[in-house]
Length: 532
Image (tube, rainbow, N blue to C red):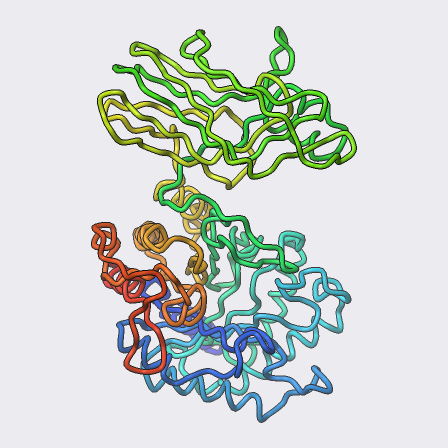
């Protein structure tokens, strides 16, 4: 009889845990307590909970730094006054019908903002005991809150350096501690490598795993200061993004003696036993039914002082343009670099050409930002921009279409998002794993229209997988409220925005309260939440 009762209790526990359907949860994070001084005055706002509920969302994530529940003089001790502000947020979730996911953004010994803190949570048993103790405290404190109202997200984003063995061992300690106190509490564990990959060794723990997605990084974080004040370089302001490299390297790039040159030689060039080292060209396939002008915008060149960089353009095998560029910046040892020269390298391609080749035949290399095509029978120029997402491993290949446009052989697009998320988590899901995307979004410098298209593709992929999702922040430079954009789109959909319904730079749509609302972003996310 006792065995049957225990079995029934375990079955009921599992049923309660699975009853929380994260696949239907959509919302945003409130990052007010991400870290001391990050978002003054470091307090959650009831108006944000009301805003989410009023606009049809049902989920809110609270990533909280340990300084907001511990004493200033001793992080091992709980500060009751500080915790009451978290109590208030949990209560606001209940009041407005939002599922609250309470998570640790940082703890003593680890933060994604400082992944190499010493001593380290992953190796220090005292810090691990403190981490588990924190979760014991919150599990006991919120034991009376129903599982439909509250879940625990154990720790934000294990860094790339954290091994699965290290991570799973610490997470299991916290899972066990919570379950001892509150077996019904839903638990969320972030994926490996800052949430990009599933933790397969935790499949049997009956937890939801959180995926975080910000790829391509220099599209989603264009202009953002990521680590130690280093600004993320801006990628192309479009979506989908052509998967073509912005680098063209010459034969002298293999002669460099520093690590950068070695990397360029190994990853950006092909090796031909018959011809030796051969840098990757830019190829444009036809056929060209009419004569066209091709214009390559060169941003900067790299060449040795004694040998200028030389670029050629070939129509089939016939030379149609050639230009040399000499490095003129101050001497930097053996290497001189001219940056931001901003010149156009152009050639006229005869009708009937099958393939155009643009190649650096002398010097070290160049960076380009546009390739424009102007057919002789059309007055306008069509332009394609390369991506800046990764080092090239193959030639940049484009195709000239009969309508006078250029297309890439591959794109960062909805299919690519599926490959980076659904495909990589497929085995985990097939083995019974549950997934929710708990972070994604774009920084305010990502062009607005491109961002809207990107987020439509992201949510469409994840809706198709039956995954719930939440953007990183409701309020702030990646959020719906107060994102400080200068290119705010007024219209409710990306399609309407593309038709030209935009505000002048610097203008915005004001919320009846004290916040600026990105109405187009709100509309895209509301529509996606309703589509699932």
